[in-house]
Length: 312
Image 1 (cartoon, one colour):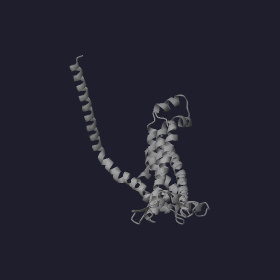
Image 2 (cartoon, one colour):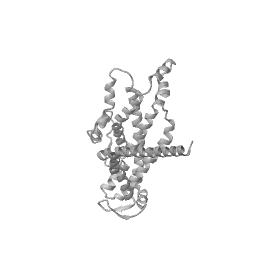
Image 3 (cartoon, helix red, strand yellow):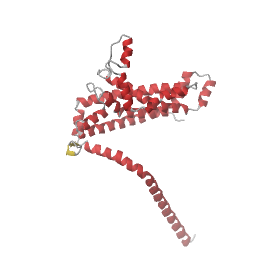
Image 4 (cartoon, helix red, strand yellow):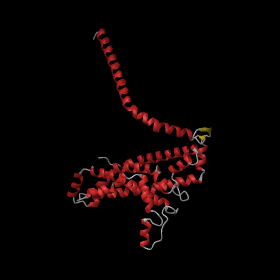
């Protein structure tokens, strides 16, 4: 190969690299153009509020929420030395412990029932998923009547058996449990639909092969249904846990954090600290702590739970 030919090949290779870089830049620009509306919305409603919250957590603020005095980690120190915050943190974890397993187990049971090929099963599927169409406010009003100490249906049932009335929302021993029951009912529809979709995506030939081998119903449930449903269960557990930590609406409607701060969950505590006490710095510090807790719990869930997930 002559020197002229070598030079021509080098020039062509250099030109090809330039054209490739130009195409890459053009594709990147097109991609960013499509992503710009989403990035703008995320920046306004997610990234900026997160950065602002982190910023305010290191400051004392005035009644307008403007930073006044830099105090560093003093807001966090004050929070963890507060008995009210520790109680709020304990109640939040208890609430998560009540609602997450309760919601998933009941929804899984209903989804397995609704997955059976029976006449009229579509009606039951509609009934089981109907809570999705009810807002938190409307559902809370409904449960407010059920929990009423004198005319509530639950206490009327207890009176039929000679049991005294229970202060479902006014007794500190029952308030958190009562709110947990209403939350399980509210979240049941969404969880049921997701699990039902997961059940219907399992290949039928696995069950047919098990039937040929003479496997029983519970053996198939334990060896086929649950393992093949594990990706859906993993998703449902993660989403339900995050939603439980972020619960606010039913607390505000049913108990407003009472009685005796038994239902003063973290999100409601942040709300009261910011918009009732006008302590935006302390509220921002609590929000940062809540974000760290949810992030840590999610990472633990991915670290431990994903190992048991069986993908088809």
